[in-house]
Image (cartoon, rainbow over all chains, first blue to last red):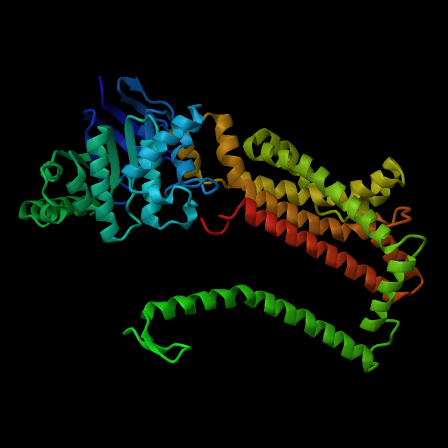
Length: 253
Length: 287
């Protein structure tokens, strides 16, 4: 079975904290899933379990029919703090996966140039990553996973540290990348508007459980050519936003 | 701020961008900031020298306790040309420098791998940690007699003493660097397909490099401060030997000369290591 399948997943940490409580979820391939919830609801634990960084206490997670037990090149992660390698420049960060896999330097370079142009970083290929702004560093983080062979991209609150304008610009970039690369994406967010705008599958979590699984259509509106501002100021979007806000608040109470 | 008019050297007026002035101001401010610390450093040394000169010239302190700067300068010229205790100043300097540098390289070759192993393997850490914490606080002078008994009075003993003093800071800094590598960086590499050995080579070691370099800098300083103790052991050349010999004859001018030469060499080496650190790990403190 292709795509992501989570069956009766429970994760309990050694200090007895129950982070995930019997989760079940199926996401088709090439879906764009956003996991939304308040801080501490288990979103990051879910991402880390799918990434293979955390082991399941019981239950299982599988991707494209393979049970996940450790990190793998089929699932690449973009971190909130970027996790770039400062001893490498922008181009070297992006070609890191290729270098690890032993791909020829010339092929690596060609692929890197293509990715750099795609994310709009071709004029800073030789820059040090620590000289870049937060938004550009996050673009390098996204470019780095694009250059890998990962079929699924996992993004842990990638835009949380960016200002509103940069965040929206990055959301549009991510949608473009998703559309053109046709990879499966799972993104963790606590931003309701971001979740609604990006998701084909919107999962609302609370207290380690999946509370709701929606399939909003705002992503399709963007694909049809409507502008981001138009979509986010639409009355239906606002109704959805308020409903989700109340759900999350009710869960926290 | 509107774009102002300025008078050009040939007497004509032209309008310049307001941003031109703010850019100029920022550049001048940067230049000032960069030289600010150099300026205060130079002032500090000059003031210390001036106090030294004033105190000695006014006779506030007897010459035996603190010779005047010009007397020390004359001794420098004399020792540089005629030598002291059957060796020239250069011979004393190179003897000490050689001992410290050999000890430093040996400590790097042994200490960095031990620090890496301790940082990546709990069992190895458990084995070495108590040994390290046991010998580290012991002053070199305390185990010097043991080294003489075990290794004799030759160069090996002197270098070993300095080596043992330098080793601990290097191991501890390396261990700290390895242990504090960002988890998200490690996870990022693993999710991009890194094996355990690739993770160590391509992520852990580069991440730990700034700490390793700082450990080497600290170790070098400790090594210099152990030099005098090391050259107690039947030395015939060396700056520490020169200082001790002069002290026995109450030649404080030569004692101060020796101290200042050690300080200047240590300072020069520290500047070199700082430059190396800036070149190898320019991101340190910035990312």
